[in-house]
Image (cartoon, rainbow, N blue to C red; front, side, top):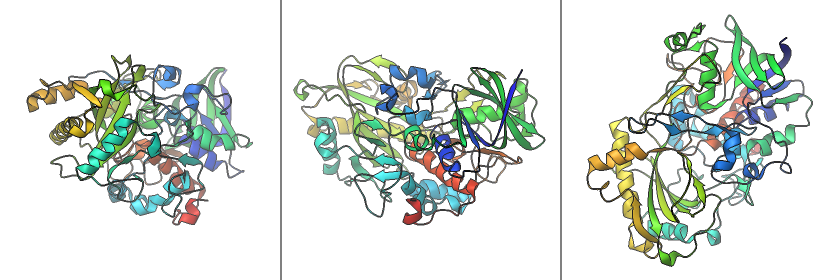
Amino acid sequence: MVARARYDTVIVGAGSAGAILAARLTEDRGRAVCVIEAGPDHPDLETMPDELRTASMIDERHAPYLWHHTARATALRPALAAPSGRVVGGSSAINTTVFLWALRPDLDGWARVAGPSWSYEACVPYFRRIESDLDFPNGAHGTTGPVPVERPARAAWSKAAAAYHELCLSLGYPDCPDFNAPDAVGIGPVPFNKRDGVRMSTAVAYLAPARARPNLRILARSCARRVVCEGTRAVAVEVATEMGPLVVGAGEIVLSAGAIASPQLLMLSGIGPSEDVVRVGIEPIADLRGVGRNLRNHPLCATAWSLAPTYGEPELLGIPWQTQLRTTAPGSRDREDACLGMAVLGSRPVATAARVTATSGPKLGISTLLMHAASRGTVRLASDDPDVQPDIDLSYLAETTDLDRMRAMVRLAVELGRHSRLDGLRGELLDPTPADLASDAALDEWMLRNVLTSHHPAGTCRMGSDDDSVVDDQGRVHGFEGLRVVDASIMPDCPRVNVNATTMMVAEKVADAMRGIAPATSAARASA
């Protein structure tokens, strides 16, 4: 027998967006909310495993808390690991805790396709609402939000991070002590949503204070299978739980499962490009051709040097980069489309975007991230079975402009790494090799074979009003009642930053709309 339950609002996914929605919506005591999460739940810091409590890179300890997706990156890299969080807190519970606001050109670009409510000026109050900035307690930042934000103190920088900062300043790049200041560019410390090494995921910052509310239920280790629709109204979610199948009815259903799982769940429900849905034996109920299209992300290519013997013992950093350079790629017509971060990797096992591996020895690296790629990928169903991962094609460097900019960035990273100001810190260049750098064709092949993901998928259910959009400016799925998508899927484009903070902002903003609260327009309201 199939068990049944009913709530005012059902949220699929308890991650960066879903946990915030649950916390904000249950502030209205008359609204019953159920959150469905495929992964486990660790309700408090005291019982939370160290690998979730401590801010760090993804490594082998996080395996039980991940969706282990693989994706096609390029023709020369047909299978690239693309994990995401499968735990209450979602990817905010396993990521590197980088907390960067989206840039002005990002959000003003959204506003041109999704409406003026998504402009930079309209979104800034929501970033402020989220944060409690421990370094810049001034009017430009929030000071009473649930998420503490801090940057590595200068005294705690690694030798490599300090030398990289001085090198970039000597070359004329601006000093940037606060990357979340308006229009910030240059070299400076990375802001993180952690405090004293403790990760401030949405599970900790948002859900923990809301757990005692009687109108909130969290269904962990429960996988949504499909959305049930009656005509053009979404009415329920079919769920596989440890106790058996469950149908959860709702006045409104919100998909917050992420840029891979949210479009997958729509297509499993018959909502998406008809040819893709029919191909796996699902009857289409709405031909929304934008579902699963417009997959946006940040390709990454990593340069590496051995550490010089004079460096000494490499610093053991949970997150191995502390300083980064935000700039424009050489020759680019875009702006602020390049990020080059300095990292120190010890000889212990470390995580890369592709796999977990033991390094052959301590390394110094400069990672190049193309922050505003032109190439667009896809998410398509591989099966009508929800347990079969979808086909994910990142289409990295498919556009000539992306290949040209990434090549220029890698050459810039090599130039920076070779600078005399790093003498005594770095040894020989390990990757790319001199042969890889001998010609543009050789370097292009190296990039296409070695490109990594930055774990920033977005855009697969994008906002807008044109035929390729999926949702409106409040996340409501076109042509349906009672159905929204609220996560990185609805971003029209990937912002030029790590996407976690922007996903949180999206959730805060749509939560206001769902509750009928006027948009935040002031620092006072933003900190409420």
